[in-house]
Length: 210
Image (cartoon, rainbow, N blue to C red; front, side, top):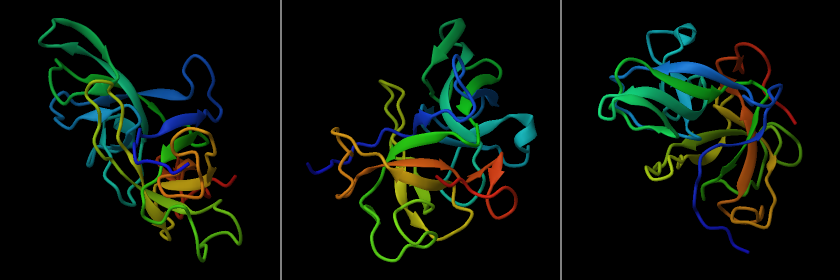
């Protein structure tokens, strides 16, 4: 069955060393003045100029900069509702004070994510392995998040030869649902962190391999 393009962000597949109840989630901060919406399943990055140690994050742009993890939701004191609100996405406004954000940043976590029509399914000469898709670097695009569900619209945008690309491919995610056909475009992939604050390839620990 042919796949259709319906991206849903980065969905946790395997939690690395983390288990219930947090599943490798860590607390970070979003500045109340940060007017960029962040959705569950979006990659996030440390805010420029503050460093990862401060904990402030924002929506990640596609590129080679390290990402901080995958956004999983937040809570904040709502100006309009006069109470603490738990939300599956940060709308970009309405907070009094810093926003408590929760991200998956375990360097060994794995995620299922839909791929674009560019370079997928992977064919031709492979860059890092002699067979299969394991070890191929990948870039992402944020797409359009859903304000009704709070779900991300992020997806893999292409296969990369750059060692500092943000993700590395572990395998196809084969299933009977949409994206489960590995032979056509928009196939689902299993990926791990490659250039993340706790796992920076090319300048620190080696990248994830299956």
